[in-house]
Every structure is written in C-alpha cells, then in structure tokens.
Amino acid sequence: MGCFFSKKSKRKGAQKEATPTAGDGGPSAAAEEEEEGSKQYSWDKREKVDPKDYMLTGIKDATVGRLPGKLNGQQFVIQDCENCNIYVFDHSAAVTVDDCINCRIMLGPVKGSVFFRDCKDIKCVVACQQFRTRDCKKMDVFLCCATQPIIESSTGMKFGCYQYFYPELAYHFKDAGLSIFNNNWSNIHDFTPVSGETNWSLLPEEAKVLDYVQLPDSDSEFKSIRISTELGRSIVPLTHGGRRKHSDESCLFVFFAGDYTTANARKLIDEATAKGFVLIQTKEVSMRPEDVNRVFQNNADALTELITKGPVVALELNGEGVVEACHSIAEDIFSGTKVFVSENKNSSSKDVDNFFNFADMQMGL
Image (cartoon, rainbow, N blue to C red; front, side):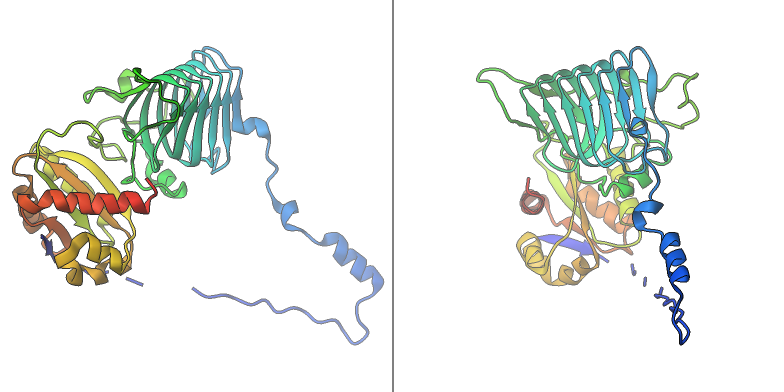
C-alpha cells in the first residue's frame, strides 16, 4: 500500500529546603506575630493587572494594537472601533471583537476562541483554536483555525488561508498551543444557513494579505517589527483547502516525530511546490498502535514503533505524477529519515482518505 524510507532521536531534579526548627522553648508570641505579618501569599505576588491594557475601545481613524510581550497570554477585547488598523503582535487566551466597522485587524495566535459579533466591513488575519462570528456582515478572513470555523447569522463572509510572518510568531504559536499544520480555514460551518443563499465563500486563490490588511504605517509604534506576507516566509503553510483539486492524483507523505519534523515538512513543501504540485491539506496528530493498523494497513508493523515518539505530520500533495515525484524527493532528500509515502497512484487516494478521515475524527471535525 505504501512505502517508508529510513535518523535517530535524544533525552533536572528537585531540591528540598530544610525547615528551621524552633529552640526548646519555642518561638515567642512576638516572633510568631512578626512571622505572620511577613508571610507572602501567592495572590500577593501576582502582578497587578490594569484592564485597560487588555482592551481597545471606542477608537476611530487610528493605528493601534499591542507590541510583542504586552499581552503574554491574557484575554483581549476590541470593541466600538471604526476605520482603524489594529495589530496584535502577541499571543492571547481569547479575543472578542464587538461592534467594529471598517477595520483591518491582525491578531497574533489565540489559545482559545476568537469571536466577532455585530461587526461590518472587516478584513483580518487570525490564528486561533476556535473561530466564530455572529451577526456580522462582509468580512474577509485569512484564517488558521485548529477546529471547524463557525458563522452564525452572518453574510458576505470570505475566507482564505493564513499567510503571515513576524520574528516572534513561531514562539507565539507554540505558547498558544497551536500547530501550524492543523488549519481548517476552508471547512466552514454555517450555523444559520438560508435556503437558496450563500453566506460564505472562499477568497480567490491569488488573494494576497497585503491587498486586504496593509503593513503598519511607517510612523506608527509598530514600524520596527519585521513583517512579511510572502508565501515562502509564512509560518503557516499555504494550503489549497476545500477548493476543487487540479488533478485526480494525490499523494500521502507522512513524517514521524523527531528533531527536524517541522523543518523537513517545510522542505518537502518547498521541493514539491517548486515542481508545480499543490499542497492540499496538512495535519499534525497523535496515533495509537490500533490507529496505525487502520491507517497504514500492510505497512503497520514497520511503523508502529515510530508513532510512540510523538505526533506525526501528514501532507496531501496533488498533481499529475506527484506520487513518483514524492518518491524521488524522499530518496534524494530524506534518505536518512523515516517517512511514509504512498506506494503508487492506484493506492494513493485510499492512503489520503484513510489518514485524513482518521485525523478529522481524532480532532472531532
């Protein structure tokens, strides 16, 4: 059914503090009182938080946002803003965007949900665990979402694949617990469909982030941040998503956990796309031995041990002759790395279906 090619992998202590004992007579009442007064509780040590640092509200015609290190995983609120350019170059726990009109918004990775409510004419770049809109009109969204995006009572919604880079972004993805390979940007669920109407669509394949969300003004506080929206620089791989495939031939290419899994996957994407093939979808997911049997079938015995080292990264590549090309790439570039590649084009579609159906079930999609 498939082929696998064959690197090797690597591996502090607790310190007890002695508690001083009192003398024979025991501590005096005064000493006890002094000790009680000097005790520090965990809530005393917490940094005092000013809510205003974690919200943007009632702003018009301005470029605003947060620099790296300003949110550090806190929740963030954006509300009642009009005609603004908003840039959040940090990771956060959750973001709500309410009652905003005609704004361009870039949000750094969000560990939980991003919720747009009662917004209109918004163009945005968003990476998050969950994405939802309610009562919104005309939004263009370049999205990386780990789960299925949901729209509710919203119209004129258009979606494209996330494309963005700034120097801290890879760390922010990690801090937010997001995988760059788990992106369901085109798998939209319309919670309130209307018969005969289409509330959402996909942006054109050639859509570029800069045509929607421009770079910060050169005189803004964000001018020193090195931003790129070029395809080759983006943290998240550009996937074809749910668009119609150009070819009937696809290939499943799987990397097993190791020190260079992400770098190897990126290298494969560069090599394959340079040859004219298209990256359809990617997934990073953990597998159990029984999953290996179901997904890889005849090759399961040789692969079962590999999945114990961590999640696998799988890619679907598409185009005429892609299976043969992937075998050449595996032999020429990844000869020292254990990978799985569809054996031939007759079985490759089944490989793709087996893996990604399993991955979607595993992730509750």
